[in-house]
Image (cartoon, rainbow over all chains, first blue to last red):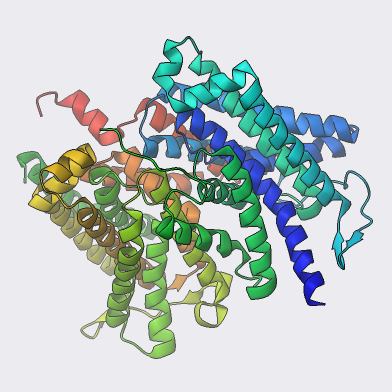
Length: 292
Length: 310
């Protein structure tokens, strides 16, 4: 039936889109704190999934494995900030892009050497009996993905609008010098952004692993699509990043279903070119002016 | 052209002429050819990144256009390789021009995104249109013959590529010193200021992007004919990154730096190939360490240390 397949594509699109949204939020956090586009964001998604699988297979209980799969990537993010980004503060865009690409190669290479090139998966968090909704099937894991993403988005909103640390991070993204003048420790902000963004990426990677599986090289495309989502939402705009992620996920699933599954991976990039041509600030981005 | 630039060009030509008599076997000749090909592409890319201050993360896409034009057009349509090469370069120029115009009104990260997207789309097309391109397995390419003379041995290819490299260096040094080059450097310094003194910023950026895309496409064709086989890997994201890295490690805005970058990063993966898996790690470390400790790149840093008077 026509409508049921539409809902099927919509569900799978929103599920994958939630992962893109978390990745896009990661890009946004780091971009706001430091103007760096972190090309290693995708590797945090991969690390989350791969480490959770590794610890689960080592015999750790699933919740412990999941927590390790979030905490360790966050530590990697912190190390990356400490040893690769902080020493070159104020370098130009091109150099920063290269450094994060270097970091992504190191992370991907180490995982490849350590865990090999095979594909891994996690058991779904609560069984795999599909739920029938509107003639389409929905995996319980999809509900986990959506629920946890929603909770995270709400938590982030609370963090940025209701806590002092969150407001300090926002202030730094508006004007770094001014933030320093009023006594905000902007180095700490940068530090925190990397930890949070790596953690968010890792959570996305863990949540999606039972559905799409994972391997050492899934980070490249997931990360780039997260970047697309962040730009679609207007780089630096948190809510835009979430909407951008969902939009990219849904369009990709619709495109794969109705147009061509072979060109599925091209769809986000066609979308981004169209948006940059016609709405250069992204769908949800504000106007910006240049300071001379 | 400055005196130093002439000296450098002279030295390069001497090295290029001497090299075949020093290289011990065909493995090294092959490596030298690959280095020279990369060097030419990197010089073109450096005009864009180093002199105009714009980044392209999809340059391998243009190499792919050239390579596949040279593979597909003679095989499926019976075109002469030289015409195929020209069609490839023209296609790359048109795509670069059409894409660049709206994109160059943006800057920095958005341009990185747009070029990256373009490169990935081209790569996916090459993988999927298997009836034309052979899909992920690739396809073989006809030998290149000019004026009834077929290029086949490594030595012949070496001389062709070496001549092209010397010519590219000479041409680029001239471009940098022309009014066009000065306008480019001006807009890298300050776009607003150069607009004020009458530089048409968008037009200059588009021209240099198109020029570097043509460099890439042409060398893509040369690579395809030299190797005799093309796969979509030639157009993938990682290849684009390698090229940008060669520019940055050698030194942005340094033509001779581009050659050094191409030498190092073409030879390094070959040297590391024996350490299965570790080559990615080492490659990544080299990138980060270079950027952290030599942010200006090797050649500008070293020449600043050696001759403070220049």
